[in-house]
Figure (tube, rainbow, N blue to C red):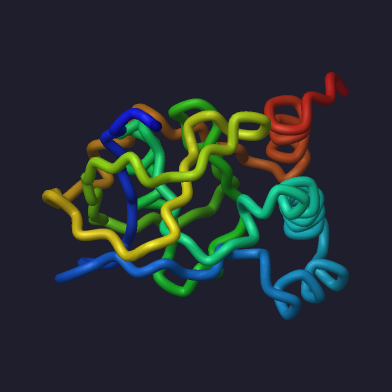
Amino acid sequence: MKSIKTLFHGSPHDIKDKILPSEPSGSVPSQIKKAVFAADIEKVTQIYTITRNNQRKKRGFKTQKAVFATDIEKIAQIYAITRDKQRKRKGWFIFNDELHILNPFNLNEVGYVYVFSTSNYLEDPENNPNQFAIKREINPEYKYLVKLDDIKDNIIEYDTKEKFVKSMKKLILGNKN
């Protein structure tokens, strides 16, 4: 039997009741098709996402309809402030507990972190040991407001696409170039 974990779900949405499972960004055909026509940073980011999702698809982790959460509170805070409500923001990624983002950018002034405990989760130890998927609706034990000021020390800004892409390749893809 799995141990009970306290997990954190970051969102720009003020959810009043239950968190419902949803399709992950980048996993539906229309989003994947758009990647082929994207330019520079968007293309690199989308290619990485498609590659990662294709690897996970074999196990069904990231392509499933689920509530995704982390056991690292700071990552949920960063996600709540960074992810826009329409899921259209490009040019950012989280590595460890830092937001890497391409200038210029506009972040949410506030977001929400939902906290819950469960033993009913799926793990992704090969790709991200701190990410979990819950395939059912979640009744958070509590939520709290997070502000942009709460994560300002965790933001790494890039002034050019070249620097951003180089950092992303080095950190996420493991390329040394």
